[in-house]
Length: 113
Image (cartoon, rainbow, N blue to C red; front, side):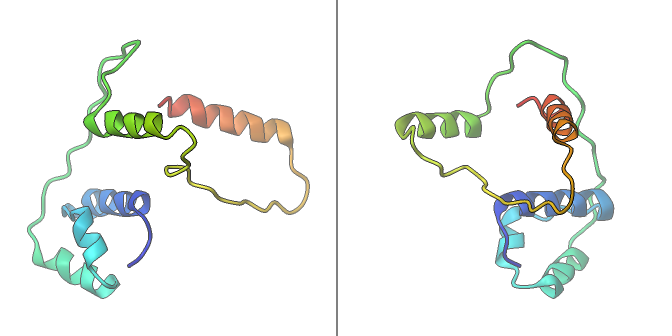
């Protein structure tokens, strides 16, 4: 199927929510095409979708093991760009820079971490 882990995570989440089927990320990467993914989905038992409950709001939250690992790796190599996700967006026509800044500000506020 190709792609990278973030897209695979999003795909697994959509499948879980829409089809009530848990597809591990390793299966998504091991399956060679959409047909294989469909066959896998049809072969496993459905699992009731459970949404994630919002936790109480705090000033600080403990970092997960994965976050701690990423922090340590970044500290060991401060010049590393391993986890950057570069991309280019070409805009045709007039770009309202104030609206763009407003949109990014809203996005950042919604996803604090």
